[in-house]
Image (cartoon, rainbow, N blue to C red; front, side):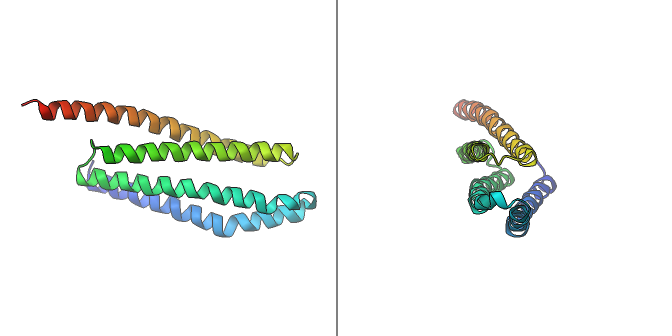
Length: 158
């Protein structure tokens, strides 16, 4: 992979991380406030939902950091090593935790009879995306395992 592609991917990752941070800082609190004003019967859910969404930012940024590390490994030529393999496993686990948190949050809102269709659709999109990332990372883990085994076998062969 050439340096331009790696730079493009790094810049893309940084832009996604900054956009997510700005959404969490500015947009989500205002949305929660407007929703609480529009639906005063659900005002007690404002802070628990915000806290749960902010908790999901933790695995997101862990996965972001690991993906950035994978790009650095690729840039250094350390593609078929155990470093990217460990990072992919962490990314997969982060995606699974995102999926689990949003499923729990959806079930909680459903039990409170507060799962608005718009929220349900947004949560479903997030859950589906997390599932795709987890599956894709799992496939990459298996492929990288096989590639590392082949590389090790070739390194032992003279």
